[in-house]
Length: 126
Image (cartoon, rainbow, N blue to C red; front, side):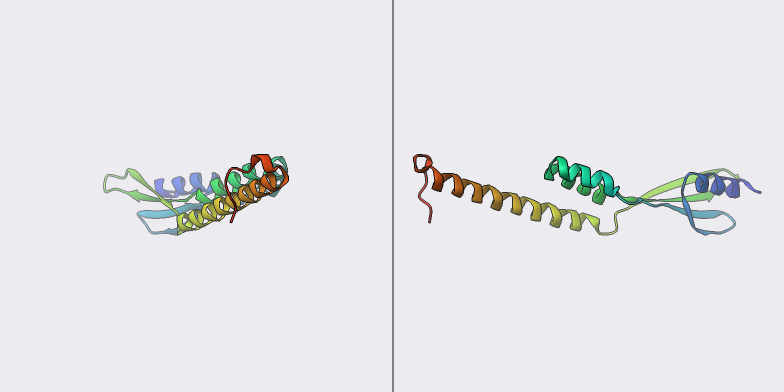
């Protein structure tokens, strides 16, 4: 086995997946994995916001791709790239929806509080 093949085996042992290889280059990908459903359910039971934060953190987590290149001197150079693949827009939409829902819930609670206790009515409701 040459040095590149040994390096590929080393990365595969750490969970990386070989995408392609030639005699002097190799490209490997580290999958993101899946979010833990048990942890998500526990966080949602503890409070809606911790569960949503967990989902957002997982959604932002990018996939790692590394390219191994053997130079003419025989040394191996590692070039790492993070691949978001359009998740940023998804995260922005999710955050917008969550904030919108929280604002609607807060407004409904305010209206309910004001209608039950007229002494708290500061603003006329339309």
